[in-house]
Figure 1 (cartoon, one colour):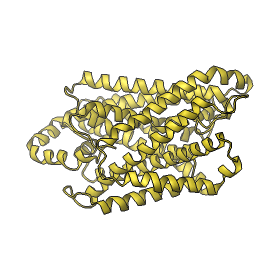
Figure 2 (cartoon, one colour):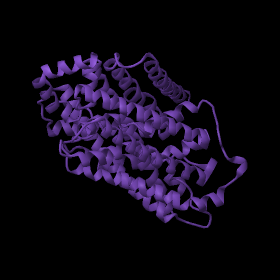
Figure 3 (cartoon, rainbow, N blue to C red):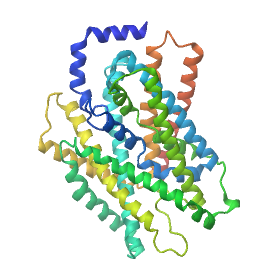
Figure 4 (spheres, helix red, strand yellow):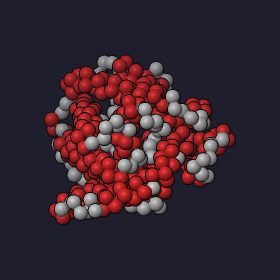
Amino acid sequence: MAARGYQNHHDDQNSNEENDVNGQDNLIVDGLYHQDKSGAKGSMFQLSASAIGSGVLSLPYMIAQSGFILGSLMIIIACIAAIISFSMLATCADQINAPTYTYLIQKVIGRNVDKHIVWLIFFSAVGFSVSYLIIITEMIQVLAINIDLDKSYVQSSEVKIAITAFIGLFILFPTGSIREMSGFRYISIISLASLVYIMLILLFELPYYAKQNFDAENLNFFKFDWDFFPNFSIAFFAFACHIDFIQIYYEMNEKNPKRASKLVYRSVAINILFYLSIGLAGYFSTYEMTKKIVIDREPLIGQHIDLPLMIGRVMIIIGLCIAFPLRMVSLKQIFIKLIYSQEHQMTQGQSISMSFGFVVLTSVISIIYPDITGILSIIGGLCSVTMCYVLPTICHIKLNRQELSICKKYSLIVFFGTLSLIGYISVILKIISIFQV
């Protein structure tokens, strides 16, 4: 059978594959962080932080644009797609003992495909980092307004550029220029903790905001228009942590289908509860006034400052200032191995020059196109759809062509093909809208 053929090929080339694991794949070509065999708990924290990322702050806006029934349905469908695609990846990884995502793609689909995946990872990381900068800049502006600085001055383009430049050059560039962050990466849990804190604040304040802003006539149940496509892509993006999944699964002490199912169902269940809690609590607090970043909302009438939410904004800024260089360090290691060789060690000069270029690129994009939902829909519609749906489906069908029934095979193709088409359409629509402005 096909799967057995691949397994035999694997057994015949143990030494070559071991070099692969100790070389390119073990060094992050596949993940966002360097991970050791003993770091299963740390890997789980990082997977949670990457799955439950800053994009969750825009889910209330997505629900407001789609209607709370359609928006919730989008998140549920994306959840189902994540469960199926994770399960397919686990099955494929077991069949060829794949340690990483790119290893799996290279062995099953072809050697040249994994090089294209590197560019998808790069494009995705640029999008992530741009969204970080947009949120950081907007939250600093909100905090400045909270302490009674002139609103028109704080929101001017000059101040926005100055904030972005300062954060990029004096915080993100120096921290991102470090070549290794193996110990520092565990501080990324701050990002997850800040988002959990935001969720609790939104739930706690929900009754007060709902009482103030509720209007039955303006309640949006279901809205289907051209925004359906980019909104759905934001839901795809929310569950996109497939690259990290294989490495985490590979590091489990006892890999078997039962443990894989537990890992998949538990992690996805936590994610969807988190997303629906923030998404619905955010929407039912401000309804049609919901902003693209949910924590950028006005305090209750009679309040000058929402102090708990203000603390949350500070936590988000700190968390994203840590997440940005972590993503940058991993990308630099990927490209050094791609440009030079697996044995090449990154010099300080190379690290500094790549860090500077990445910070400048993302800063310029965040200034020119500060639309966080647009950025998230493009990443979700292109990178997430390709790496989470298209490639896992191809791998699963190729490795299991003998075992899969025609009905199941075409069901997978139709389901993930439809979701992928929605994602690609959203990218086209966003690009058209950018050039129309």
